[in-house]
Amino acid sequence: MEIVEDVVIVGAGIAGLTTSLGLHRLGIRSLVLESSDELRITGFAFTTWGNAWKALDAVGIGESLRHQHYLTPSILVASTFLDQPASEISYKGHEIRCLQRRLLLETLAKELPSDTIRFSSKVVSIEESGFFKRLHLSDGTILKTKVLIGCDGVNSVVAKWLGFDKPVFTGRSAIRGSANFKGGHGFGLKFRQFLGKGLRSGFLPCNDENVYWFLTWIPSTKDEELEDDPVKLKQFVMSKLEDIPNEMKSVVGKTELDAIASSPLRYRRPWELLWGNISKGNVCVAGDALHPMTPDLGQGGCAALEDGVVLARCIAEALLKPGGEENNGKIVDEEEEYKRIEMGLKNYAQERRWRSIDLVSTAYMVGYIQQNSRKIMNFLRDKFLSRFLPGMLLRKASFDCGTLKI
Image 1 (cartoon, rainbow, N blue to C red):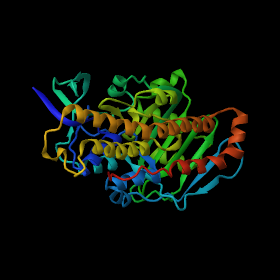
Image 2: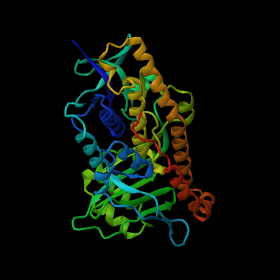
Image 3: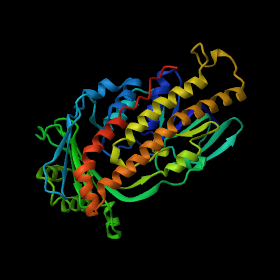
Image 4: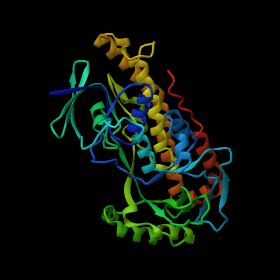
């Protein structure tokens, strides 16, 4: 027996749940398929810039999350290559916070109807079925849907169906962690970043007790065994912090082993985004399935939130009649509805294509500059580029994805 749905979203991550909540706010039901047996809380936290808070406000959860995360007043950037004072760039007038991923996903999920997320539901194949798509799940379930949205991450089944290649390894890896200081950490709220000798590291408080930290480096073959061993990961990070202030060492030292993770940094080649099928018929992708990028702009999660708002708006324009009620209670011609959905997803793809290309390309270049170990590049970065880069980050964060209003 086949189950028929209007909208199926593959992946209960940031993009998937934001899209689903946006649709819910507009009166459209969706089914979210998650391959894990619970929400996957990977990455611990991420920097949310002004563009992300506009998206969170659009789906109605910005205020509740603000109460749990403090504003970041400035960033201190220090070089481990040149003997010079750290430079401080103020974030005054900009809304920047370190958002805990667990709280974000739980808040999104709680706002959805209880039957929206279907866990332990892995998509194994996608087939054409007239004006529908037929999905086969690993447990034997078959679903038919009018709209299929892939928010299933860097190894996306939906992106593969659309013809995208797997994201490319950048040659860099990242270790991330989250430390909890019961009673308070005492570091203040500034974002601290350290650059030099082929490393980029830093830490950023989320609130009085929780601190997110990261280290990116260029791994050798022998480093591959680190990925699944948190004990070795922690030892490795501590060994790389020789020239880093003791505050950073304290944060890493306080981190529990189950709050440390490592991953290779991958990105989608910009020309794939330029020429590839972000949408095809009634299928599209969003989030890391669309634009996996390096973390150097702090825009991966923010862009996924943007995607969700834009996509929900475009789908609603296709599925809702001008009167605001789905189908106005009438039988809608399937071909006509399919064409409206196809056009809605094309509009989404057009709106997100250049934004995605911009963020992916800029993040890659910023990472290359910041982490380059050549002396001349280190000198130019620390003397000149370090003053330019923060302003560029703020310009990228000025983007407004709009509201859900159609």
